Image 1 (tube, protein in one colour):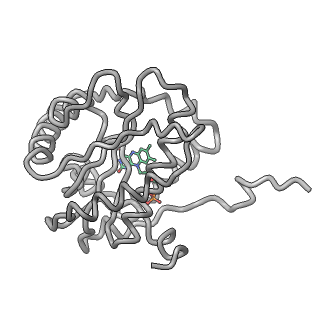
Image 2 (cartoon, helix red, strand yellow):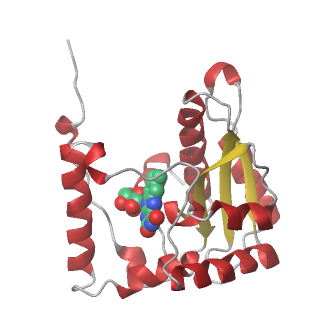
Length: 215
Ligand SMILES: Cc1cc2nc3c(=O)[nH]c(=O)nc-3n(C[C@H](O)[C@H](O)[C@H](O)COP(=O)(O)O)c2cc1C
């Protein structure tokens, strides 16, 4: 795929088919992501992938806990929306409005997609050591984006989601992630369905609103 096309086609996919991703593809995608930069080439990001029976168990427990309205307890705590700054707060509100319009006010498909973890065929968990400096999370973010673009290049959709890591004990139990690593980022992977939810395209601010070019 042309690089520009990969960038444009990468959008959050929240409904996947039952088609499995081959181990070769998973391995190749992670290998591509390993080309991302990191502080002094520290390469602190670790990748855990749940598929098959393991993922089935995670999905079942997740469904049950969300059904009981259990509060998430992610390793990276969520923060009050106000702390993101005024403009980001407006953008977040706009996203909710846009979802509402897209689904004509009925957000059930969106809520269900979270509950069933998007029916992902592979779930990626990115971790860094608990003791690592904040810089390691910058590296991890770059790793995650490269991973999603590498997946897109192979026709595999993705979505990063807090939903995936909001019960880290559930993930640790089934995937075997040690306590001294932060379960920082979850990325769902799979082949997109034709469902309406996958047609949603989020807005971006005009580039002038984020770019300062000083001559
Ligand atoms: C750290 C992070 C957490 C996110 N958490 C969720 C989530 O819990 N549920 C969800 O549906 N999308 C989640 N998203 C996806 C964002 O809503 C999405 O990336 C954003 O609206 C831009 O849309 P796009 O990815 O389609 O371009 C998350 C994205 C990031 C980077």
